[in-house]
Length: 114
Image (cartoon, rainbow, N blue to C red; front, side, top):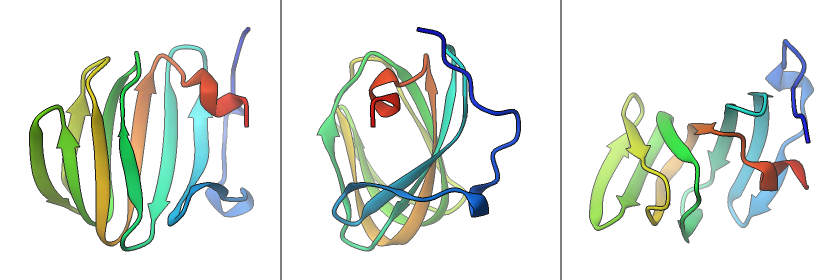
């Protein structure tokens, strides 16, 4: 299947998609090769440990998060970032309300099914 978003995606015009307790997201642009996702966490929200075939890099826009990638755990705050290689287990716990900006390559097809 061929995926491609609109050229311009205005976040204020988009509805949040609830993905877990304390977590919601907006998909801000994509094609088959890359995807940009804004994820809002409430304090205490948990991105459960999981893994996927996609390369992922994430920018911490705001808040504070305990992030685990493989066996490594760090506390990250607004302005920090991290990289997750394919098929490495990872997760996050939100310590202060915040937003993560995720970039995936290739596209997360499973996000398109919702």
